[in-house]
Image (tube, rainbow, N blue to C red):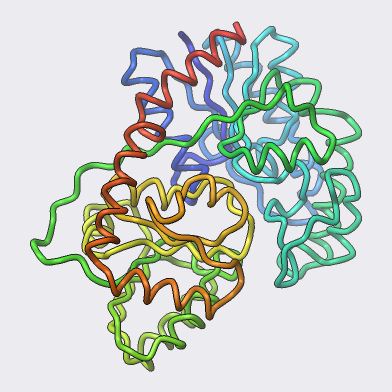
Length: 386
């Protein structure tokens, strides 16, 4: 099969980029011919400025360029990922007009929430509900910038009015049932959204030979991911523990200040998928996922399971779909630092039980989140679209 993969970025910046690049590798490994169409490679990324407002909303160059690619590559199917803000949905009518079936993975809530987090001004938010997008401007949802928020609001209203996604995408893939429910509640057709879990391909890490101890967090260092909450919880734990934090973001300095002032044994490092990170995951007893926002399906949990480590996560969004309470990890009350601290202590007190949960997590990974499992289900979706 000749598959056109479409995404804004060619380099790894976050979870959606990891999914895109991993899918490319998987499909090529299975013998498919893949062409990656990205803004980063084909056009250059668009700076978020009002002078570039029209291209941010509707990129004509992207539409022209993908037409050239379609004529030269002749794809059987296009699988889109995140395209907003750079490629933009300007490419979707072109794909449909040329008779190319389109599948799109919903990596976040962007199509129903302009800032794609369902989180603003330090709290969860569902005001827009897929149609009342003026709330994005009224609440200054884009990095506390009214100009950016106005552009985000305009983008959402324009794309909704033109039905660019609804009319031109044949099927949407949601990694979690939670996200599908949010879309359906916002007026999207349940029949056009199919749930298919993410996958990760994690190489076997080399063990340090030491007994696993402590906790690890890896990902963005920001409020949305719950890093301030994690630091708050750790301050409530009096007995020193081992803490590994790998990531980058606006709360990076807060993590450094915490590391220099706490009795806990803290190791900080950059977030990158490397043997060192995987080794650190295996050196910890479990992974903490303290997200303040509604996560879709965190890759950090899947990676931890793949390496036989349990997870402790917030009890909202798509996280409870992945963590089986008391079997592969535990859930804590989202936003509750005290409860998070208690759960951390409970899991550290019984390392044998925690490691057993990690083993069950690895079994769950093999059954639900392994590359071959994902591939079989994805190809079935592709074939239905042809």
